[in-house]
Length: 366
Length: 224
Image (cartoon, rainbow over all chains, first blue to last red; front, side, top):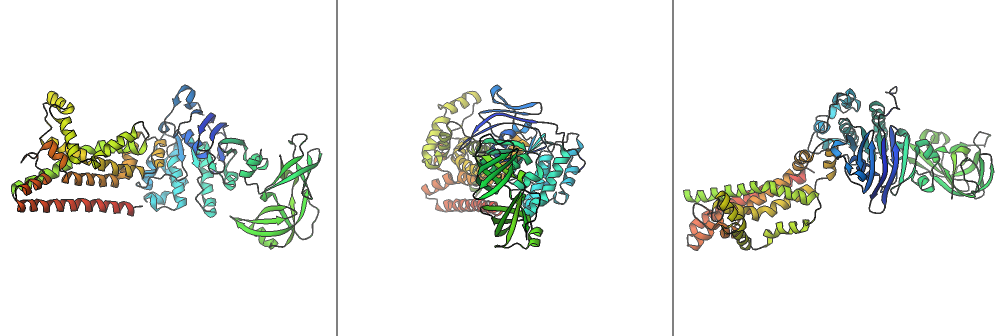
């Protein structure tokens, strides 16, 4: 599966001039989606599900132009609206919508369209998602992870041209998430169906997606490659929804080439920020917790520019990782593996040095 | 029980059953439209359909008598074109029973439709199913117990109908005599033993209907 091509998704999705009034705001979107998995990232109630519904043809917008590959699915200007059943779009909603009165097998075959493409055959999909043992059961007797795989398989069996996944892992615990993620990766690599993936989970986004669209209150706040959006949030709002753990007010002291010296309280930090508008003085300083390295014992020379003597405030478990809250003149969060945490024998009150590389300190003008 | 009494029981049972079957497609269509769609005049139609529940049955019967009589709008048309008489025939009984039990069917079916997660129907559509297939493979099976419950209630209501029936169909022995009409008439004529035998039969029929309906409701709760 690893050798399957990751690029070369056959169709692109164009969402233009979308305007769809929701209870508190209007969903307004203008994006072109080309990558294999695009995450629509946003807090609850930012219009993510409504956007999927518009793409699937389950709801009608006041204004919208939606094109999948060569086919125009919605064009309100020309009164074009292809009904949901003719769109060829697979949709796995958040509650999965498995038909409770049908068996797993009947669910799987409900929309099965054998189209001669052997990637989408029943046997292949059932094998790939390992649901052979479940086929004759009723769907109400499946576990959460099993339901998830059945819903995914059911959507794939319709030979979709586009797959919409609405928070597919939201109701699963961390352990189950890590077990389902590889299946999603298999689907991505195996079927070359473009996927729109709605989530507000960083872990899923970083594990699966190529591109992401940050959606805040119905508006696209940022779009770009996942790494870029995470390391360079375009605005404070985006940094907020990405849960960049540490966001502090800072003042620029000095700029030399790309290296910026910024003061946070009495602490000086070094940052690399080539795109700062000239004349910027006040900034938000963003540091992601997994970019913080901890060193116990004497501070030794090392490559990261920022060495911050700190004391440990608390150590808590966060999924498979440990979250360490530090006090280094300001509050700083670090995410470590449990092994690392045990080796350092971290406990509240310990003295440590927090290391952060300058390129990992991101500045947003305020 | 005499042959004549059995005939009354039999007639009442089958005309009630037939009325339930006849109103079923209309009742489901109306219930579905009320449960799943917004349309102008919806609240008016909702109210009109429920009117027979609260109006005096005799008043409903009078309206039907005027509509379906030979000089009425519908009755006149049916008489002139199809030579079909409604009033004072078994067809009159059928129409009276149907109209009186229609709201009960619509209410039960509507609640059953509303309980279905609309996402199920939507996702079925994204899988290529048209409206008819969605209805028969998703909506109707999931609402089945509610629909059956509504049919039983309608049937039970029809079994006991009196006021509308006597207005539209009279009480013609061997033609339009139902259980309730016969009980009333026999009491009027002082034939108490006869009335009590029919009373016994009505009680048994009503008991079976209500018990079955309750059983279905329990099944529905149990399956969740």
